[in-house]
Length: 139
Image (cartoon, rainbow, N blue to C red; front, side, top):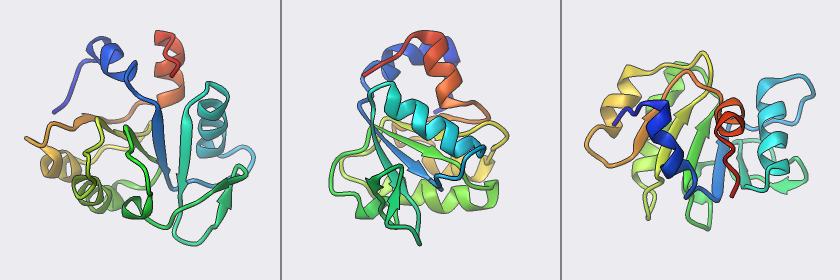
């Protein structure tokens, strides 16, 4: 389901663990800036990248399904054409994440459709760092 940003704050207050899909620690890249900010804010950040074993000094998993702990928020830093596959991965998690978040500039009607009716809140074209800081959200 899509949600108005002002209605998102109570749900975000429940978030502790964030899977960052497309995580890389290359300075200047948006994913690097946001990932580091989420870590600094106190979230349990889990990097997801198919080829890396370490990002931000943290163990990195090749896919969402490989993460051994429940994930509250899936934060996607990949092009829109990859979002449907990540939405399907999110649907296979047990328990389901609360939020599937596509970063600024990323919109995927197909991913939104895949997640429709699942109970997972979908956010598109917004920055987790900016929105959480604006709302004063911390774990």
